[in-house]
Picture (spheres, rainbow, N blue to C red):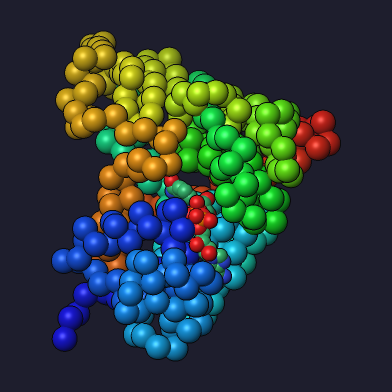
Length: 348
Ligand SMILES: NC(=O)c1ccc[n+]([C@@H]2O[C@H](COP(=O)([O-])OP(=O)(O)OC[C@H]3O[C@@H](n4cnc5c(N)ncnc54)[C@H](O)[C@@H]3O)[C@@H](O)[C@H]2O)c1
């Protein structure tokens, strides 16, 4: 009998289908034993023999070690908590939940269960991100002074009309900043440290029938004194890129659509040394650019995050993204919404 960890996937939509593909690629490391979706046809499309209408039904029928939560965001908590209460490990799609309070409920359930929970933040596993964070940790950017997280994407009205949950506070938790921007906000936090204050303005300018924003702008002050700019929109036709800029007094980097577009660092304790565009493609793996602005073309980074999770499960590596990590991004984003509503800065 197979001793591979047994995975159940809950939510067989756009990203659930990508998870099923990644799990197929990792068939020598894990086994997908159940797919659950309230729309049973979607579950059956990913697993003809082991499709279930709910996590509850899957848990009753199969032996499961890990539950992967790919439902609309506002349902992540209830499904993750059901899995944790049954003693399972959990992988949750981003963002962890729609509010900090609901993220904290999952954190409490995880503490009780004592199992592993990771939240997907696949761009932390991009070689470009790893290089920039390693340079910051090594002091090669000197004092990190500022950063910009900018997502200038386009989503047509049909995108918001494609699922009743999209563009709602209850299930999407927000618009361009929460759904599309959370990855880049998470990377800004990874680079600049603990956020302490947020001031923001948001608007709904190019879409109808949505409760949430399609443009968000804001500023974040970090504990270190560093300052960050937030810009997230799904109203930038035809859709450009997800971009992170990080600046310090000895180095700067720009990551554009997951690729290093600029990198200049000064190794600590040595004479000034420069690395420029041109070497970057080699450093970042040289692969074809991944189109972050195109949800149909997801990068290989989910697989890398799965490998980290499997390493943590086997006790051979540290889990690199946990609930507390993603909670910081949810806190910044929900503070931006509160600031926009009240017209005042929000202290975190
Ligand atoms: N990491 C990424 O790059 C990325 C990309 C896209 C989406 N996401 C995240 O993934 C989540 C899902 O997004 P999506 O675009 O795949 O949505 P989707 O609407 O395509 O899929 C959601 C699926 O969940 C099912 N579902 C709803 N309630 C359920 C329940 N109680 N039990 C079981 N199944 C249920 C729906 O029937 C649907 O098939 C969101 O949290 C989103 O933010 C992450």
